[in-house]
Image (cartoon, rainbow, N blue to C red; front, top):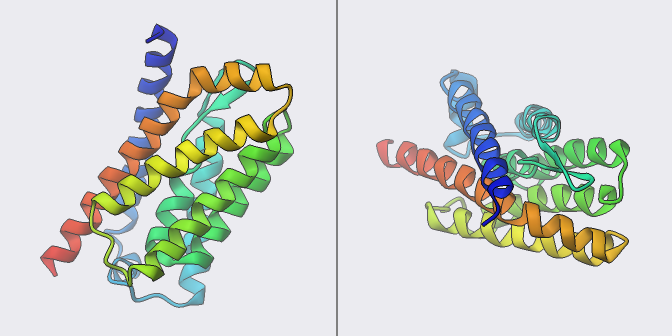
Length: 197
């Protein structure tokens, strides 16, 4: 594997860890702890959407510029919002991160914006379908598959195709592993919290 791919992966893993630290610190606050237990209302979902939408924007700005685009962990935060607060929280965070990414422009603007929005919404839908019983492996597998789908979306929508293919060959492994590792850590922390109840 190219050294640049490894260096991108390390940067993204560092950023994913920072998002997880913010998650951990937030949920030491009593107001947020009840959300971990699935006790949230529409206002709580809005608050989650805004906080994790802001973290999605951070994921874009802290990304690594490469091949005319940004390797990033933007999708991590909307997925966490969806797994915590359901479809509305995930959709809200995804829209905040996705719309921001769209207005930054570039040849990947549309697929990146769509991928971020879909990742949050689908995570929230998964929370409801599983009735809150996520465990560790289901969200981790979801993140892996969602990031693979995100790469597919880039190849389908970004033009010219040769440029998109070159980009995906560089960013696919770091972004897939970075977001998957982030969701795995988040899921483990959430699972341990529920076991301690």
